[in-house]
Structure formats: structure tokens, C-alpha cells
Length: 107
Image 1 (cartoon, rainbow, N blue to C red):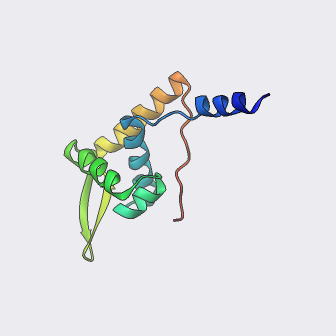
Image 2: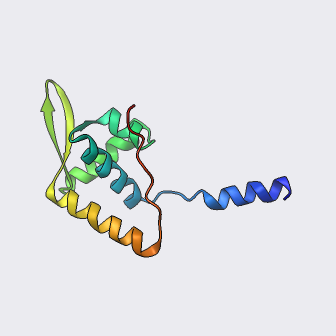
């Protein structure tokens, strides 16, 4: 294959994440850790901290996450509604064949 065809093929394989994909990744990372500070959630989902903070705030406003104080720093926890969202997301992704990427753990 020519170089241009290979580059075009790679671009097609790289799909942008939707808002709902990002929400599911954030919820899943926080669920895996049990409780999670902002920077760990951002790094584990490969997001800039400022955008992750906006998404986490939106998730808290919708009742999918809650925050609590842990020795002076804010950590996030998944609520019951957050678990329900994650289960529905997994079911829908399975129906349409969207692979669910593994979060980047250990950073």
C-alpha cells in the first residue's frame, strides 16, 4: 500500500470520543479506584485537567458522581446512578459493537 493510503486508513480507525464516551470512561476509572482525585481521573482517561474538571462537574450536577473531602483534597466517588449509567453504556456499546478501551491505570 502506498503511504497515503496507510495514513488515510489510520485516520479512519481513530474515532473521536463523544461526550458520553468520556463520561463513561471517567465513571469507570473512578469506580476502579474507589475514590479518585481530579488529576488521576484526568490522566487515566487521557484528558487535560481543565476539561476533566468540567466533565466531572457535569457528572456531579447530573447525580452520577459525588465529591468528598479527603484530608484537604477533593476526591470523587460513583453514585448509584453512576453505576446505572455505566451498565447502560456497556450494554449499548455491546449492541453496536463499539470496543470499550481499557483505562490507563497506575499513573
